[in-house]
Image (cartoon, rainbow, N blue to C red; front, side, top):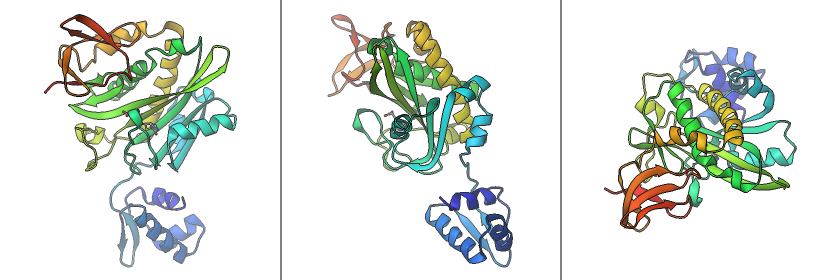
Length: 321
Ligand code: BTN
């Protein structure tokens, strides 16, 4: 989108004259004015300062492929094929497209906004422009579908540890893979099976959504949190979070392929939101007390007839009020 270049020129928050912007963009002053109008339509707040030029009112946190790549560990940078988009239907779908084009490396897609962002259980994922992080990667594993047990939980651990590394204490995990902070949902993970490429080689698309700057969400029907709200003292940069997450994602996928879920079980349990709480299943019946996960990533609930494992996707659980 053309206005993105204009917005990046204005991103220092200073007044820029129409003449200078026209020179920098290589267009006429009328074309600059049209781009300002377009940027306003896209939701950017730009002031026209009479006789002086244009100024961005609220600072923007623009995604930038170069900055994201610069923040990666070298082995990760050499392994991935990064796509950064202004708008996309879903970054998970974009990764599928990149794979069908034959991406050179592990395909990773990030977008400024999603028009058809997907959540678990067929729910839409709110994906407003410029506010949050929408990131997906195509990951390949050897050993058939059964090696994927617990993968989505492990990715939750990777996200929690990444956020802790960026200075956010108290990140918790709600089985199977919601990321919670301060009693609100901060993010979620959507793992979609792509299928078996050849004997025993399976591919999944792992999508991660994290609320970064979001300050209102009237249409979200559950308590939510964003990094900007809970930790406003930090100047959150989506590029920085993206680099840290991609590093963690690739390292974690490698460790998971080597050691399986067992070596992450303790890290997951340490952040378990359900532990010791009375849990309610779909429909509202209390079914028992949360006891953590087993070696396959099933959730263990202690009820009247003993401890029962619950498989992800079978029943959705929540804490009894
Ligand atoms: C959930 O908690 O329901 C999972 C949400 C996953 C959202 C992310 S945003 C990036 C990727 N693209 C999508 O369409 N969904 C995932």
